[in-house]
Length: 368
Image 1 (cartoon, rainbow, N blue to C red):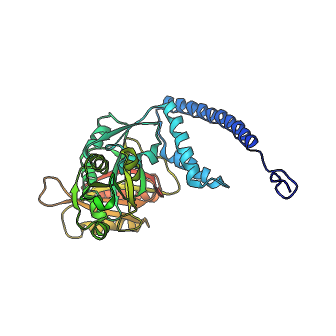
Image 2 (cartoon, rainbow, N blue to C red):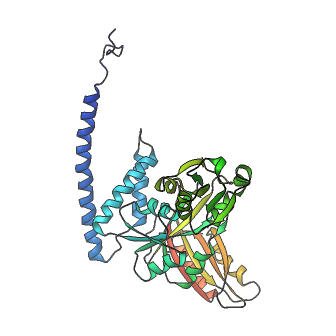
Image 3 (cartoon, helix red, strand yellow):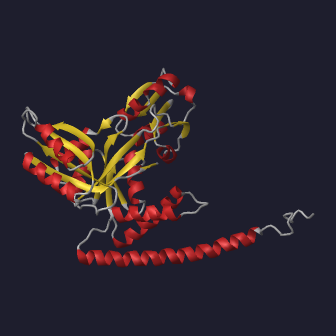
């Protein structure tokens, strides 16, 4: 039997022939993608005439879910979503080139969350603090911002909640990013004397560090990407950061997924000025201030219960400059346009000193 014979009487596919088929398919794909982009451009023009936002997170999520649902392989659903995310991002850039603020520098977890939400065809604006991201959006210098809201290990992000009470911005989408910490260095693990990272990252890996690097000095820095940069230029130093930050700074991956708690996830809010459209899996975020009297909080929380609305998150935050009093941040299932949610908000407005609706948006599944 010839080596070129497959054993069933058929000759195996020719390499050049298969590549030729791929080339023809690629040509078709380029044409189809540009046809799609042209339709997106026309939609953008209609939106402009109607005064609507270019970025429609609800629609984009619907497209990604529909693509995943129609997938029959061999590509994974996540691979297809990543491809379409960039296709959507490029098409959106034809309509409008967005500026998106995030905690910088590049390849922080905030930057990765922004990439997951917007794709790469936007102008990313790295800022030094959560407050700066809010100011960028509030002042109109950036169309959107991506800020951490809560971590599954460490809980709420106080700076973010404080800024919601300070500036009138909305939550128009969320990103739930799995946080996988990586030990990065230009030296061997045995040579490490210092480990750089953000305080939160060091805390989330403290047990691993105690077991594997008990003699190393832990050094807190402003961001995980800054830690990677310092490790790249400091002898006997390592960083805890994202794998992408290590690649960017030319560091070796010495250990992956060193977080102490499996399933470590950070939820990020996409902040802007517009509400997201209704979907089938929405949540509404709001904050309210109550009278400082016995039963005040219990009375307020009874309102969603009467409307059979599920509360998914509640946090309290002290009022700035006040000796007594708190602002409460609440998330509940449903969109602000839903009848039961509207009734609950109306009842809260009668009961509370102040109610601010931060936004309604689709619940995001974890990514990364």
